[in-house]
Image (tube, rainbow, N blue to C red):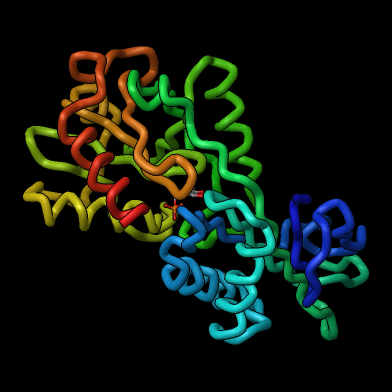
Length: 280
Ligand SMILES: Cc1ncc(COP(=O)(O)O)c(C=O)c1O
């Protein structure tokens, strides 16, 4: 089955989906995106992702183009046409095609793209043994709560991580660890599960919210507060969350071992609960 795309109202094979070189997404990174998982053909937390897409659109003065009902139809159709039980659905809206000028074009129609690809899970070895992260200075803009397609600092940070054999890079700004290049972070510190608070400095991860809820329901105390690099290194457990990352145990931060160097028991319990939530 070919990978499929939905572009400006039409489904087509991904290879045929083409956008003008004057698209503002291409020229300015003037657009937003979402990434959604399907598990066994079910679209996971679709409402939450559509709500966040709408928030990002509102913040950048972009129209949502379709009603929520229409979006749901498009995503359901995309998922079934894609034909992968476990898929990642990528949505992108840009401000459309217009002669290059920084200010908003008067007449451009937004470009709407949805693609569906097979989800390749993280290696079981990484999940069992845990991964490594590095910390990097946060050079991103001041609205990291908006899921903008401008990802250059994230790309550079992730590449730096991969070049040093780590899975992810964690951004540090004003003495606080904020989030990963494409994930949120949790740390078990003195028996409490800590994650940085929502605000303009991080993306309000949908997995982050779900994991917080699962943790609270299973008796953990979850606290949203700042984490310093020193706190992180002294943490009993560290893990990342994200739509494609799910919950990834972290056993090394900047080459220093976390806890006993193995995924911690709270992390393992939350992975178990998360799996139950994805495949009820
Ligand atoms: C910067 C950043 N933080 C956090 C996340 C995790 O968010 P979610 O759980 O909604 O995928 C992502 C996911 O793409 C991200 O790009």
